[in-house]
Length: 268
Image (cartoon, rainbow, N blue to C red; front, side, top):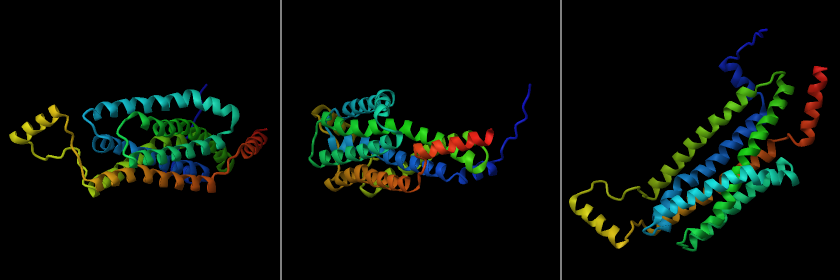
């Protein structure tokens, strides 16, 4: 048997998305969450190179990234199912957001204290990346909830439109965070390489520095600016995301139950 399906136009797709206020709320929330995380990840290499420093800063940077990635995956696979046994998704959402904010506060305090060992930074890394991993699951659930809401409101199910936005918003957040990071680097005069042109004399000097364990440095004002942007900016963005989410998202478990009941009554 065959079924004739009418493919929606681009205009109809955007109309369906804009007509679903709950889907738009989640999309905005995802953009803000990812922007906060990507700002830190984009600036992290400069933090390890110029702030944490040390002749083995590249090894510490790699080690930290391995730890963070592992915690994120572990949180999605283990922590979320455990939390789900005790809390609903809304409570898990708020727990993770405040855990991430707390992680950024700890990161800022440690950076301002001038710690030079990578291992203490595993603590804020744990809170931030575990929260990110769980939030990736939670917002996907919230997106699924908006499909039923849109079905009730607009009399059509737009799963493909809504879930395709998840890829788009990740790209959008990546672009915004890259812009913020580039502005930070420009304002505080932080460069990936301190020498634009490598001459014979500068090359010899770099080789001597490597042998003697000397690392490149930047001014103290640049270091402080880097610390502030990679911690305070994500905190502000996360707070804005929570305020928008709390004021606009209405799909509680009770509300979803009512929506499903009404949809079943329509089909009966």
